[in-house]
Structure formats: C-alpha cells, structure tokens
Length: 599
Image (cartoon, rainbow, N blue to C red):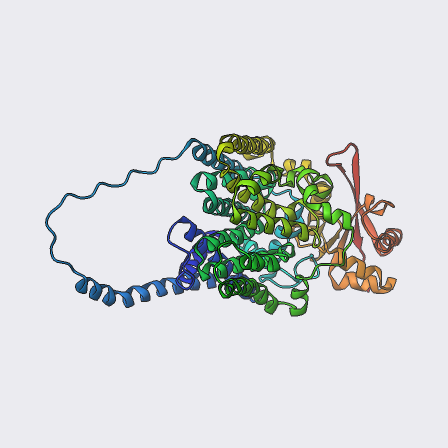
C-alpha cells in the first residue's frame, strides 16, 4: 500500500511541479516529472518521517490532494480564457472538405524491435528475482536493516545500533516508507521500479542523440548490465543512484538540444538528488555546469554562463535540504573528496571497475565492458554533443574513485557511458550495421547472465525450497541468527550485539555498528560493561573467526571481545552453533553469550 501511495504521490507532485518547469508532454516529459516528484516525496519522507512514519504516510495523501487541487484551480482559471480565445479566433465556416489523411504509423526497425524485446525480458527476469528473500549484504546490513529498525522505532531517527542512520540521505527514507506496514516485497519492488527508471533515462539520452532505435538499444544495454540484476532485484541503493545520474545526463542532453533554461535547472536538480543518494556523484557538481558552459552551439557567452549557473543552482537544492535535516557541516563534507590514497589505483579505477571488478565487489556487481567497446566509435562518429557527454561521464567516473572505489559505485556513470556510447555509435554511417550487431550481442550476453542467476531462485519462487533453507545456503551464519532469535525470546526484553552483516534477520534490531564497538574498545573495562547495559544488550553473538589474527576487526576490538569470552562470570556461554561456510568448505562456529546483570 505504501509503495502504491508513494508512486501516486510522486506522479501527482511531479505533474504539479512540471507546470513550473515544463519538460514536455511526451514520455520523456513524464519521466522527468515523475522523477522530480519522487525527489519531493523523498524530502517529505525524510522530514515528516523524522516525526512519525505514519505522519509521512499521511503527508503523501496530502500531497496527492494538493496536486489535485492545483489541477482543478488551473482548469477553472483557464476555462474563461479558452472560451474567449475560441470566440475571437472562430473563422468563417469553411466549405466542406475531405478530412486530411492520417499520417502513417511509425514502423519500428529490426534493431529497435529486438532491443525492446530484450529490455522486456530483462524486466521480467529481474521482477521474478525481486520476489526471492533478500540475501545481499548491502540490503541485510543497511537498507532493509534500517527500514526494519525505523519501523520498530516508529520514525526515521538517528540510532547508535546501525551505520548510516545518522545520515539517511534521500533514498533510505523512501525504502523505509515502502517497508512501513508492508514488509520486504514493496521495498524490493521500489528497487525494480527505480532500475526500470534508469533504463528509461538511458532511452531518453540516446534517443536525443540518434533517434528511437538508439534509445531502445541504450535501454536494453543498461538493463542487461551485470549490475542491473542485483540492483533491480533487491533493496539496495544502486538502482536509485543509476536512475538519478542517468536523469541528470538525459536532462543535459535535452537542454543541449533545445537550449531551454528549465532543462538546465532540471539537470542540476537530478544531479543534486543523486548526490543526496551517495557522495560518489559529487564530481558532477563541477563537471555538469562545465559541460553546460562548453556545450556546442551554445550561443553567446552570457547564455552559456546562465546555463551553467542554472545547473549549479539546481545541484545545491537537494543537498541543502538534506543538510537542514541533519548536521549541516557534516552534510557538506560529503562534497569534499577524502585524503588521496593509492594514486595508481585511483587512476586505474574506471578500467578496474569494468574489466577487473573482482577486488571491487565481484563480477556480479560489475557494470560490464560495453562502455569501453562503444566509446571509440561514439567519440569518432557521435558528434560534439556525444563527446561532451562522454567526456563528462568519464571524468566523473575517474574523479568518483576518490570518494569510494567499488564496482557498484561505478555503475551509475558506467550506465551513462553505455547509454551515450550506444547513441553515438549508431551514428557511425557505414559501420552502423556492425555496431548494431555488437549492441544486440552484448545485450544478449547480459540477458543470458541474468537468466543463469535467476535459475537457482526458481526453487524458492515455486515453493520447492523453504525460505529458511534458502537463507541458510546464502547468508553467512544464518543458523546462529535463528538461534539468537530463539534465545532473545526467552530472555528479558533486550537486543543482541552482533558482528555479522545480517542485522536485518534479527527479530529485534540488534546493535551492529562497527564504530560503536571501536568506541567501546577505547573505554575502561568497567565502562564497557556499563555501556552494554545502557544499550540493553542481553546477548553477544560472536563468530570465533572474528577472534583470529586475520579478522577484519581492529586489534583493540578483538582484544575486548577476547576478554569478554574469558570473563565467564559476566558473559555466560549459552550456545555454540555450527553453520556451513558460504562459498568454501568446512563450518563456522558461533558462540552465544548471555550478558549477566549484576545487582
């Protein structure tokens, strides 16, 4: 229910805002309006959700009613004007004549038809995958875990239990609202819709460059990128970042074609929304205004400067709004790159993200190499607008490596490179047929990967495999989570301190914040115990692998946990649970310790 309400509110809000920033009446305009409305809904969820998620849900109804009132007011205001214009412009009655023939319906070519079919298949495959229980680490430790904790709290509030709760951005409140009262399915459905929105903006961008066939090719390629499958099928932030980043470049492509000021402002607004979803979009704050300033056929210098200023002004709107919600100084620090480290790795980041993604998260979240395959022909034959868009996206990808180097972080700008590359490559004249074949082959390869990844999920989708069995095979130490939930039900009301990344699966939101553990490790031993009791921790879930020298935990945290296991008077051993190692042989051992209350 919340997801449907959110979509209606986004459409209504976007339609009302579209009267101020008219982006057109075709499908492209509706995509721009809907995305702009989604940004308004995200701000409403962020601010109203801070008071109560129920208040935020009610505010969506208010937005729908307000947008409907605006439409009624506009219709009433325009009715006399339309009547007068009809009376004044009424011509003399013309002589009867035959009605002009209707223009022939546009026929799709084979490339457009094939790519639309591939896009539809990718949408169906990812929709089916979105119905399987979530196992993604980002979902279970971040997005879904926070949504579940906020529902328990009743509002979007900072909490020391989980990371990112103090800086929710714009996308996490949307997932919290989709989850509220409805659970995991609508949250995964939101990711699927955002991923389709990303494919839609790939269509808009390439269509502006080379027509309808290029738009269909770009949408199919984006939908068949390896990273599209996990982005569309589970509640992670990648789909939203892809959609907003592609929206900014689509608006820039439209603005460079038409030269209208509202489109430049829209470009900045979408870039600001993308930055509010993740700091990796921060380089766009400088690169997009520069692209507007240096655009081909941009007219006089004053017009170029105004366009760049509009893009920059739009970029600041949503980050400023999110900064008002939280710590203002901390919010603006996200725009600044961290201290440079690993200069060689930063220079090599775009290549690694597409062609060597194993250290950056694996091939399953790779954006693929079609951007590299299409870049050269797009630069050679795509024209000046294509070159500006390609160079802007490539520089954004390169500089984005300073904020964080992961294949998923590279996916939004890689999707832009794919979309622009498809549009530019299909302007290659005599090489168009060969490049069209390359595009279809690349999309087919990506679609085959989607199908291969969906195949193991058929058993759980059809009910042949139980949910718990599915999770035991894919979530590390899920048996320990189930044991901890059983113990928590028998203990006084409280929570567990956990070290794994499956916080979402605990019945009670656990304490799973690495920074909180590091702060506790710096305390005196007596203060640590007092801190545990202040957090109402009744149970410590400790995988023994985390006590080994090669553990990812800092040495101080390891030493603190080791001292707890040796103090049996205060930390009473309850259970020892064995679970299979995911992706390796052998078993992992997890111990559950009861925190003993001392009178």
